[in-house]
Image 1 (tube, rainbow, N blue to C red):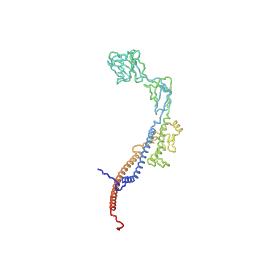
Image 2 (image 1 turned 45 degrees about the horizontal axis):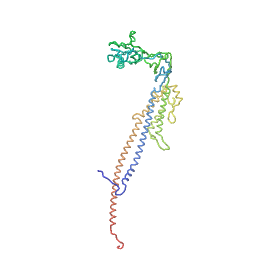
Image 3 (image 1 turned 90 degrees about the vertical axis):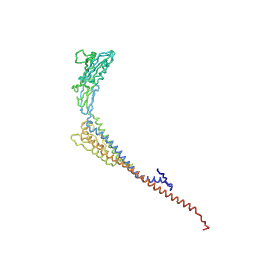
Image 4 (image 1 turned 120 degrees about the horizontal axis):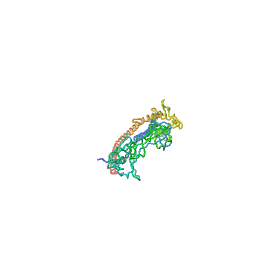
Length: 464
């Protein structure tokens, strides 16, 4: 059972308060020192987090810039998008073309004769439906021999080769409509029947068969698209023309024979300019962060967390050196950022010289991309440098791990201090309690002697 100790009874002193003050005085200098060390380490850890984030954003920009396709952006325009639209990729070359859409590709559509309604029985047997060279068979029996049943059998067939069946309920009766799902003359539909009660003859269609034997009527033919590009005819099974012009895709919208429209392919200066603007913006943000993390406020006499930090100094020096080094390559027109219209200001940030960069993009569009995206170009070199800073076991991770270790060590020191102060407090209490007991004993002796002396007989002056 724990004992109850009442201190200060013998002496009347506030021994608990005295001990607390002595323990606080003993530990306060160390606590203050550890607190300052931890605050400094935490501030540096936060600062490296800010630096890492800024470097990562810059690296993301550089990853785009080391990809040549980011600079070979093209744009294309149609003079009449109701006739055709156009899209391009980086392999397209600037040029203009005359486009004449003679014919659109269409899918075949076949219509049956009139039936009383969709529940009318058509017949039984086997229907063979072909789309081009592919076909599938349907067994029509008493469970699906109505117009609606045949429609559903066609649409639900797992091996359907490209036919959709619908029913139009007109005033005069119901019609089964077969529509090809693929355009082009090679995807014509044929319908044959065999066996059964002969009722499926009402759905037979074969364009190559004897005249007068087709029961279905063609309302839309399966035909190819035909387009003239600068007078050269291109025939295709769809309304999307690819491969006729490298990197250009033409989507045919409507027929306009004898009415040529223009297609223009140009370098997309604005897209490349946006890439360059992003490069300048993220680099300048990085410079701002480097400055803020290493600044010194003379008035307040306060320093930023990474002022004088060797890691920060190394990163900044390597970036400045890489940005200022020229590219030595005989295959490139440009060797420095300044030559393409990006200059370094006195504060270390980048700025774009508008008239110069516009001229460069107009005259040497592809060389700007090569300057950044070639194997030894600016984008590639800078990406490799920044990526080394950020990679696992890189300079930043090593530094942050060291700071985390420092913080852990400070926590260990604080725990050890608390343990030592606990021992110190116990020793002081023991010493003060012993002193208190001694003072109490002495007080008791003093009180006893005083009482005894007071009880002695008084000797009068006359007797003396």
